[in-house]
Image (cartoon, rainbow, N blue to C red; front, side, top):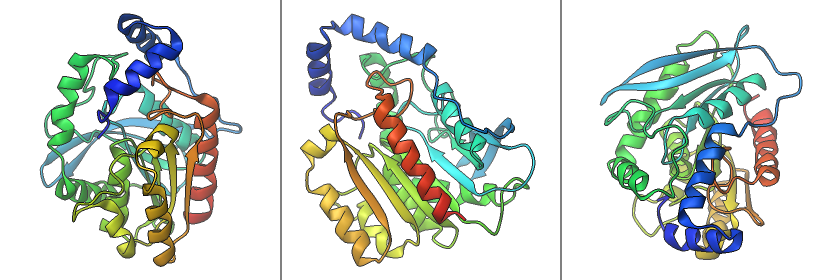
Length: 291
């Protein structure tokens, strides 16, 4: 869960940066409004739309973006605990400009249409945490699977999605384990998955995502925050061993100096250098696994 150890992390960040809680919140708002991702070289022209996807539990509002001509590999993006918002539309559009048909989902559609939080909202704000945490806690392994199947099925109905290429999935924070359930739920379609500072990938519970690896056919990227690794140093080893036993390629790396949440451009701990490294590894993975 994204709020695990949050107060300890916040205190350390404030101390290192010389910030008060109020200043930290103000910084987060500024980042959320102004941060832009680096541009894509030779970017394709893309078409963007807001779409509604039918699921067994209702209608999910999503952002769909794809190259304006042709059919490409589909990708499902699962946002972090702050949900579908401008930063994740940026991420989806950037990936589409690189040649993918991308569905960025609102995982909280059962409770609320996006946006889940106001523009510039920060997880450092107690009110924001109090509003989004119950939404995340209302989801579970079953909802992850039913949603995953619905989103993959939606992509397969779209002319912009190639049916001869595998589908990819990527997720941030709470979205990390959902990618693994997606890969296991539709193994014949999902050929690659990526988790960025994912939480709860390896647990001692019977529904731990790592236990699903033998049912997958997806190659994987796990980009792990340094402070997450410090708390759970064994998780990376379990992931490596589990994928190796399943004979599935998996890149499992701890990103030095990167704090939990470092990839989205509106994060207060956004680390552009390490986020770009993780993005480059994603493009390599998708380029070979979704061909």
